[in-house]
Image (cartoon, rainbow, N blue to C red; front, side, top):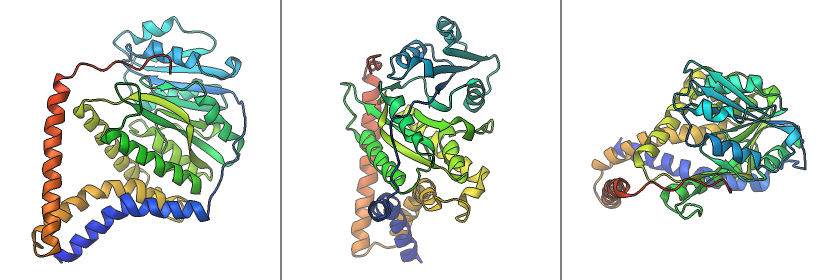
Length: 352
């Protein structure tokens, strides 16, 4: 029994992080589905949900003004979710025909704020953005060019994580994010990604359905809804948004926990996604999203089962596991101490 648990757990982890990417590499080589991308200029609404974003609100709007897209075809819709830090006063100076401010006096959450923003949007394409990140000048053009292909319903852009020197981050988190983007690109090449990047993604307005009030991952739910309706959700690497890496492990932990909880919520509240005859990207969803949820349990099972198998190869493997976890704990302690002493990083400039 211990051997079965050991090998099942090990092979499951290896499939999620190595086997699935290798499968995608072969899949995209022999059965590619290219997108008919071409210059295209539909009307676009950028929808940004904000709560207390006084530190970023003004620079976020100015970044939108600098985008390379016809001004008469672009509007900015800011949906304020009962701010208490003066964000509404800061943005009132930007209110105009092309900058729509939607304000709620009651805190209702991001999903409700997005619903309110989309309800006021007039563009054929709705682009979702967060307050913190900044778009590259051609980001909107690169996103919407994919909608020239009628089969495309959602387009996810690329989030680039920068370090303190303004270069793409090369730390562990940055390398993992590059790995994640490579997987999304391959998924896009064979059909669809099972979730967009929340900082920069676009949807045909007629395909948007109001989000349930407690939705955690709007980017994933919007993408999968579109796929269930027969359209594709793809990844566009040339549409870039920029963010700075956070040195705060607690903040990063909260983000990861939110993502995991959002994936659990998604599968529990939308079980149709787990029906292979209804979901055309069932394999991608199970391998990419559900697989990541199972991995922590597999790692625990792998460690515990290895305790009962300490001879030969199994003993060496257990020593490697123990060393790995010891290094992980040590690294976390060192990083926590450095984070406490490090000054706040500079914010991303408006030039991006």
